Length: 207
Ligand SMILES: [Mg+2]
Image 1 (cartoon, protein in one colour):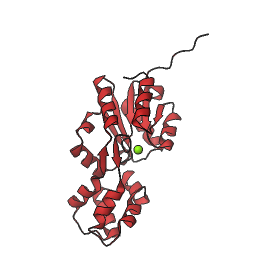
Image 2 (spheres, rainbow, N blue to C red):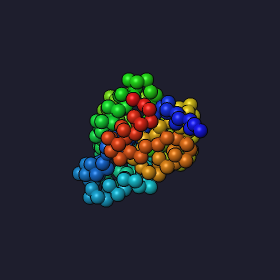
Image 3 (cartoon, rainbow, N blue to C red):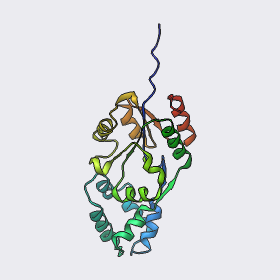
């Protein structure tokens, strides 16, 4: 009796936050607090995984509407451009994962960004992190109108990559997100450390 070998995936789908870029809403909270009447912890709670951020990242608010709502809730008095700089400047590169991406691209593997995110963050990331220009395509929650782990945004990934099931190798740090991918037959890596993820990508036959 023979078993057929597991096929090698033909594309890699990367989550962004805490996979390729570390982020900390505590930074933006402290900087906004310096320009408002609120303390940093109140502002962090307003932003980090909040209903307001969900509305912004699921495409229900424009950049300007989000700015006006945060300004009104925090008594922030700065202009949109200053706010955008502060709001976007929360990211730090995760070097071994950016190197992993570079190696995949050098090997000719198509790569995709798949992120719950917003227009202000993406504008900042594009302007500040050159590696970000190197992906084949980008699937963003605020453009798709749905957030991971909602099945609708996984369907967008399948359409945009032209792939499904085990053709896709998907890396994400949030368990509910990888579980939603696994439920569709995608190969998944629950990202915890760069070392483990790089080993898993090699084990999948890539690199
Ligand atoms: Mg993440």
